[in-house]
Every structure is written in structure tokens, then in C-alpha cells.
Length: 112
Image 1: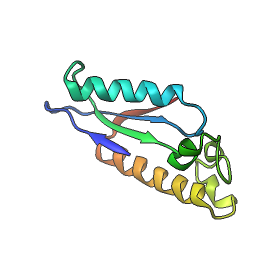
Image 2 (image 1 turned 30 degrees about the vertical axis):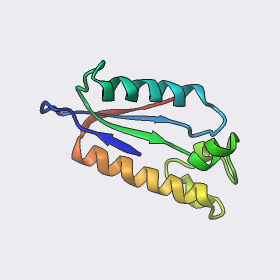
Image 3 (image 1 turned 90 degrees about the vertical axis):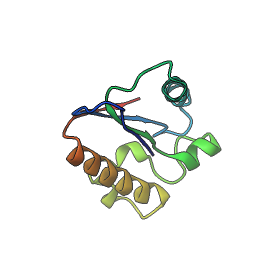
Image 4 (image 1 turned 60 degrees about the vertical axis):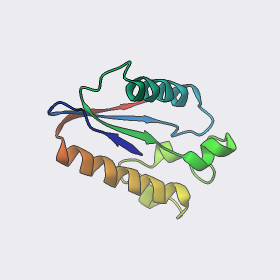
């Protein structure tokens, strides 16, 4: 997870997620291109941005998931799965996104 803050004050916030399924690489590449543009200054940052790579271990292994489908765990449904790295990650992602939107309530989530 990576949080970026614009230089100018703003009240807008966005969560951008990719890599929830580790074998879906195109969205991760799009996020990488966006981050490169932001870091190089080719693209200005106008919103508070939280970038989430959902399942790095599955991405590393180029698998949809390792134990259970992370995409099926959001909305606290992770509690209904056997404990695994994915259930721990889902709980962590939910907590982080909730805290982000508590701090910057004028936002929306975008998932790839």
C-alpha cells in the first residue's frame, strides 16, 4: 500500500486497487505507469491517493490466489474463510481503506 498526498490542499480522496488476483497483471502495469507519471512530474496529483496492490504473494507466484480468493473476502466476509495470508490481508486492507476514508471522506474507490 502506498499513500500519496498532493502539494495543494484538497478534500478529494481515491483508492486505486490492483493485483487482487495475482495473475491479472494488466491493471498492475497501469498502476505502475500512473505512479511513474506522478513521481516524474508528468502527471500532477490533485487527490489524496491510496494505491493498493491486493495480493503481492499471488502476484509473485503469478497465481489467482494462494489459499482463497481474496476478491470474495471483502465486506468482512474474510471471517468466513479459514485463516490464511489472504484472510489476514483482506482484514488489513479493509481497515486501511476505512481509516483512509475517515481521514479523507470526500472520496471513492476504484478497483481494477
